[in-house]
Image 1 (cartoon, one colour):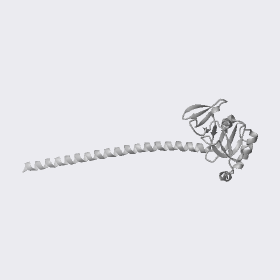
Image 2 (cartoon, rainbow, N blue to C red):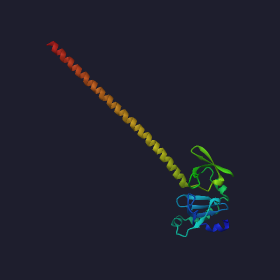
Image 3 (cartoon, helix red, strand yellow):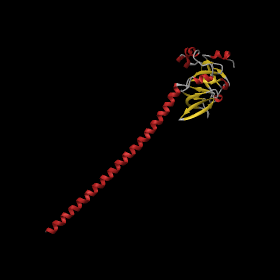
Image 4 (tube, one colour):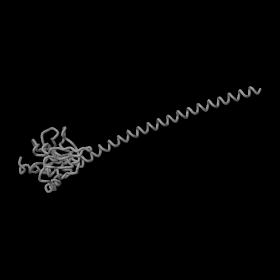
Length: 209
């Protein structure tokens, strides 16, 4: 595939690859020597390494999503902003949350901490993961991805609070039940003492007579 030929795809709706986790439909934003960029409806901006692209299908169906959000204007701005290589595109996202590869066991989300010629490093849950650049098929840096990550994080925190709240409520309930039982026990003891007092008094009065 030659860049000069593929540059005519900018602004068009395409499907990258025919199927599988690395397949995606979207508007082509940029075409560079070793990567292309598309804007997919659900994922946002996706960078594809051209070494791993098997096919590109031009879709002639209407794309209302593109017209609604004015992607043709977005394409003009992107022409002047895109790094010249896939590696430079990765470098431009250093210290950002990104998704490496789109699916399967090699797909991973983390903060990009290092970018070298042969490998990159992601920070994932306090772990440093080295990924060799030759195996990176695509990457997605997206506000949508960040919002999804925050949503999952907040959901985990809420679940933890709910579990803690349930435990506190149980302890509070157990404490109330214990106090209630102790109160009932004291009431029974008081009734027994009163009964013994009355019996003693009756016995004393009988002796008096």
